[in-house]
Length: 237
Image (tube, helix red, strand yellow):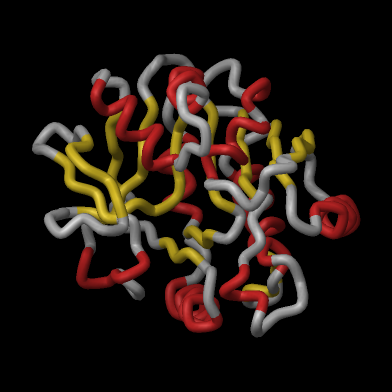
């Protein structure tokens, strides 16, 4: 896989109370999460990245163009509806999805091993893939996690934060196909989970395990602290 998308348009209101920077620029063990993602993408063979911006987008552009010194080619897409769900942010970059591409939220932190799981997938195909974590006892904030119920073949039966029966959680890292874009375009204010459900009904959505890799979403002061502790404890690999 050679292309990736980062969704960085949201307001990050739960983290704003503790940090003045836009959420993708909050310092995580010395590096903002969006710069960390770009560095990891490059290490894993990504050569082109689209970044969807919205809230305080000019600040994000200035910071990335100043601080990212790698070789990835970056294309910016603006989502004027950044208060709407994350599926709308992805649709802002729909023209970038001409084949299967990696997709990440800007506020997620991953080990390199986790990124490699998706980066190693082929860029051809119509099926989208969600990376899931089955290590439920290691999830830091299960109440806020997007729960996933998968069958023995890795197909998604249900996905929602409110699921009561589940055997995995959504890590926020995907391999997406153009078919996911088509599914989201059918909805007025889509979430990614809704798009995943639509593709699942068409047998065009599957999952892959994070394995020994680790991840953490960073949207509150508590999860930021936990992400920093993970990096200190486990390292980037």
